[in-house]
Length: 65
Image (cartoon, rainbow, N blue to C red; front, top):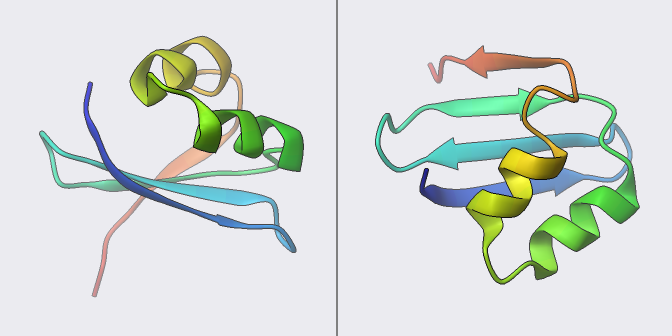
């Protein structure tokens, strides 16, 4: 899994992740700031994402208008 980019909104605790293969954006809800900080600082972002974010937070695919 390759992550193209990510964005975190500390007010809403929403982590937005764009994936390289699909080009799609997914928003993950209620991600604590410390989880985002560890993800941001991780050397292997894909591995951290799989181990600590994927399937642990409610998410939805965002269709950009």
